[in-house]
Image 1 (cartoon, rainbow, N blue to C red):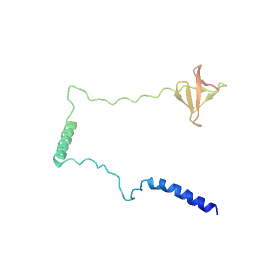
Image 2: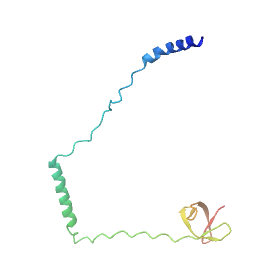
Image 3: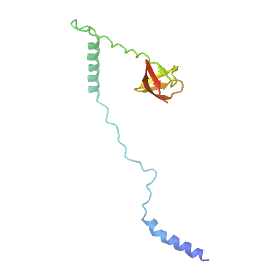
Length: 125
């Protein structure tokens, strides 16, 4: 019997707090939307067509006789592979340089620290 009046008292105590809460906005209310800028008028679009035509003419025109045609840049050749040795001095294949003092084992994907040794580098334990 003591529980019912206690529950009623607890419910009455929370009623003023519930009255102060703001009502939820209706679910159909939308947020403001920002629209993209309007498209350019047709007069400006024809100006772009004229720009494209001028660019096409410039590209089709041969280069001036005073300047030779530009040559494409040569691709850099990869540096010669430095031999990599394990800590016992056996040569390891499949190692790629990964920076100063580092190599990557292409089979396992692991990186190893190295030190210069003879004609190549040696992996440090």
